[in-house]
Image (cartoon, rainbow, N blue to C red; front, side, top):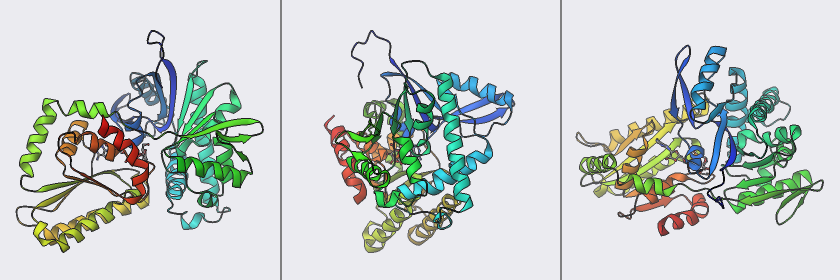
Length: 427
Ligand code: ADQ
């Protein structure tokens, strides 16, 4: 999107996502500290410069008291963010439960948790009710802040019910919905007990977007096979209304990375890292700690490499930066222990008194440190088992202008990421 006439005011845009681009940490009764949230959705939307955008979302914290809510609303307003306050039970059932325990694994082809295979199970139903309730709460906040002419852009699998909630109250609102994950084959989607409701709600949007043509095609065929609707070259037709469906592969603001490399503090970081790892090749993994990112598989493959190539043991180091997410979900806690256990074992096996083969950090790095790391890396390892797209591979390529290191992508990422990477390289 580009504004045709720069003198005209920017188009107002309400970006609605489960999480705001900042997380709130309480400092006192009425004071809050805001920290940048780490994740692909936030990174992808940093380039929205052509719009007068406001974010609506959850600040990642339970705020039961009015004083706290008022103070947080005020602090967020300075960042053009508007909070949706979700209570603890809703977060547990909607976010940890329905979103992260049911839709996320299913959309990444990991199946449904055992207990949810039967649609009649009570936990499934109450989680789905909480999902609908939460989506309605997001819709209420959107309606409160909506001005005529605004475009409302809903994001991701957390908010599949939102287009319907918005249109029910005001059919004139222009609504877009974009999915950051894969949309699975209709054979997988039909395993969801709420498959029809979710599809019908998404179809209330005017425009529905996916990263790849394949995901868009899966969505259209789910609408055809599950709802019995007509797919057209433009999208899906439902009772005379056309919902446009298309692929919009997301990218990054590559200039932001390229410019950062010139900054003195980034150059200092680069110098330090080069000295620290002199004489060794640097392999790098940067991921949210998530089962779809294939982190244990990557580390085990590195172990195999050291096992089969003893001559490389003191000449290569793997830096794995894995920021923890969804720490309340038991599967993620298990994954974290598993990764620590494997790293400890490999370092014990191949480490020496002066060097360890794997440096594993479970925290986020600031932007400048990240750019410096990308710049000194010889081999980036992106090993997702499934991923909507993957922005780390773009970021690495953007920071490699003079170095020309190697990007190793898992098979599932080759198709989705290849085009955009060529584009960044050309720049
Ligand atoms: P993610 O899975 O979060 O989101 P991904 O594409 O892997 O997205 O990007 C992660 C982002 O977080 C990158 O910008 C990276 O720099 C940053 N990041 C990760 N670990 C970090 C760390 N330790 N410190 C600092 N920054 C870190 C979803 C989908 C993806 C899709 C994106 C965008 O799962 O498939 O590509 O949205 O649509």
